[in-house]
Image 1 (spheres, rainbow, N blue to C red):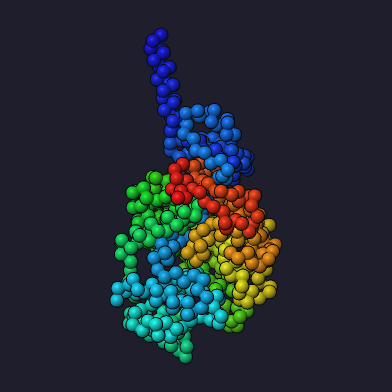
Image 2: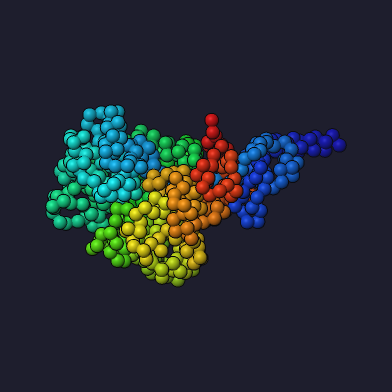
Length: 554
């Protein structure tokens, strides 16, 4: 009898100890993104960070009486936000260079550069990013001469906001010319790129693949710099409510750095890394198999390829001439045969393919290649993606669904580009641009992201743009091409459950349901109840990954 009593006592003690490791969060409401139970009051998870139960607050507290309680009364909880298209190291580097975003003219660019230069040693390059000539009065590409008076000797290299063009001063041009295998002058152009020239001489702007001519002479960042950049990017992400990122274009070296952070338990969010084209990282996946870190926060199972350039720099590949630049139909960044060969390699290795395509010609080229490569497997669950899918010809919309292709789109691209997009495309083609509802009407799955640092890392900006089709100043009234707006529920799903599905993560994240990771965000407001214009003003109180806070407001 005594042994039985002792056994029962031990069992109760073990049960109590197990319950003591359980956490129960209660809130005014918890949006789960689970259609079977979309709104609940409480969430319970275990010591491993897996959700045990969701439901009524009283019921869960009674079920786990010894659990540690987290009281979020008055708050709203949503699944952790996932950015389906970002550039983590790119964000980190942008945070460590001159920020030129929203500079109103070239004079403001010079002011920001001069202020930043004060911290640099004498021989260092002056690096920056974020300029956009479309925001300037003249709306024309700048030149090296615009920088030379202020910086006659120090090399200056400034990447455009979309990362598809760069602006160099004469000192940087001299350095690039000294290493280039052929003179920068003349009328030749590098494959997949364009050197802007004035009377046969480089003007200072390099588009797409031509940027490599300057990148070849920019000093490479050392290990300490790269670690600092990664740390800054990660903290910026979780501070804004992100618990996951699909990192598009990760090199072998950058993956190794992320693995170090994961080993050191310094990854505060999940990174789905996509290899940077047909290079070393893809070769590793084919040789060693798909990668997943034991900690569950880092994996590489896909590859990011490029078809064309960007619309803002007139590099997006169009079927007809740019409306504001007759004779120009954009650029194919990757030669079509090489692009298809990379797709075939990835397909043979079981690697998911995500391809950048912005123009209608770029999107058609990718869909055609996907159809040939996938063949009879197109109806299988491959989840290949087109990143941006920004300008699509009318006949191509149904093909996305027919081929099972995901449209990975970025809502803030529409609101950033709307002042000039119709100038580029004209009144007819614009109807197939940034067409989120048209995609959905054709049965296409959307995954939403930002393309940071091209746009802000803050997903609240994306929610706002998706629902309102307005900029941060809530212009224009009623939204730009408002028929393409998403509902708040559709937008939230695009940044949670649908983003998770796009990376084959739908059994782990994107929803709050038993068995899923306890990744969530605590907000002051309810994103499904506030007016759309207020979505970019949501207040993040805390961000949680695996049931632990990775950011809390001070």
